[in-house]
Image (cartoon, rainbow, N blue to C red):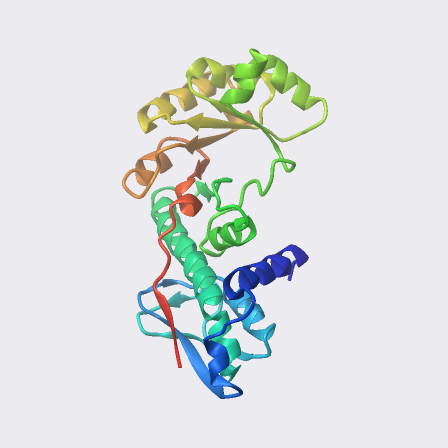
Amino acid sequence: MHKRAKKALESFLAEDIGKGDITSKLLDKKRTTANIISRQQGIVAGVKYAKEIFASRGCKVKVLKKDGQKIKKNEKIITVSGPAHSILSCERTVLNLLSRMSGIATQTNTLVTMIKKTNSHVELYSTRKTAPGLRIFDKEAVEIGGGNKHRMSLDQMIMIKDNHIAVSKSLRELIRLAKRHYKTIEVEVENLNDAITAAIEGATIIMLDNIPPNKIRKIAKALERLDLRNKVKLEASGGIDATNVRSYAKSGIDMISIGKLTSSVSGLDLSLEI
């Protein structure tokens, strides 16, 4: 397990426990067994982290459902045994993370299924719209659900966005500067002219931001006529969800990025029962 992930898990526990779980300490040295149970169907994600949290407090964990597996309502995911005060001190931290990650994985899987049934060549990507401190877990949950992580941090890839262009005043100059040092360059555009400029200057990915599917088709066809389409990947982003994702998948793009995968999370309903 990544050191950053372990450190984060410890900080999550510390945040919840504080100076000590004064209620669970009333149980003295009693030992018990508990199960984490699903209250709705979905895709489970975060099991390895749940196991790590419990194990760090001297508990034994039996994994019944692995990350990526489908779960039905009232199915057991994990059985944990050990000191009662340890299990109960970890309960909320485990459920919070497991619920969030499973919710992200479930939502991602639903959208990936819709996309692939429409166009098997289109890939779904997450964005950097993650909760501070949770990016490792949010992005991994997307991957477990069948999506792609995209950039984990700003140092991983050049992405020239509208505010960069607003400061620079020159899209061409920014792309040329980037090409001196980097091979992969993504550019956010809002119209056909900028898409053509980006493709001519050597951008490898063109993000079509808040552009409806019918206009994306026109941009894709224009790039084809200019013999530029095969030199770039087209990414659709902005306002995409289950209601319109199929339309975007049919619009001639290669990638769909959705910030709501990690910014508007509906956690999977889970519970821990002794």
